Image: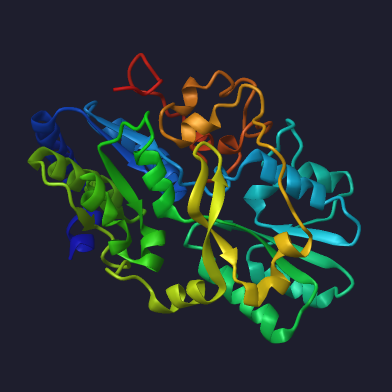
Length: 375
């Protein structure tokens, strides 16, 4: 079994690194992108970049759901938190994300009297609504396919129990349309992808087959241990050296080819594809989720007529370029100076899955003299 063969034997690491060097000697330098915030943190925490040969560059893509939520949407949420009779419930990461004005966050609004509740799951927000029928509780549904089934189950529970003062502001995103938009952009410069294991656990490894099929780009569905990631890099390096792009599943101990049928059924029952706005990637058709009309009673956007304003980025913030993998975090002029985890300007420095936060916390350095990433 792969887990027993490699992951529990640190002595095998030099041999794996040697194999990567052999393959990149054959292919030339390679640029690989992870599209999962958990991968971003695991790579930084383990020091994987410092182990890999200089011929391998690891880039962080649009894998942090908090980071890709546009500033105008945050502004709309901030306004909600000030309205009488409304309480905004959110995961902790989103509380600190600033809107278009520096320092203006849900955490700051709560300190000045705004109605904000930190929760661990949408069910926590639903139970708060059941306990306080006099208050409209809006849960901020943020995440990729990993969190969509849980949000769907919560809406179904609200419907089954007839809880009228609960609703979801649906900010959920779909991975494939965003990757297609990234690949088709003029500044795209990536040779292969580390695909998110937890998204694939829901959708199945086959959900990423479009990478080799449509774009001749190799992809590896990877787990989250350092050795998972190292072995996944080796698999990508081998495919690139051999000129045989394919989709491979390194995370076989959890991810099945077709995913989790029960979770996919929940998604289909409650949500439909919808256009969505992404920080760094713009407006992408069918890249988000909309709550189906049968559950419109629990759709906060419809219930309260929410319409985000025009997109306005904080001055000097380069999160949009970081999210697309065309700029290393340390190349942003605000990084570590005007923008720190204690006083963030952009969301990439806030989130526990943000590239800038990972680089700041673990002291990652941009490879080579140019931190701006170009072919």
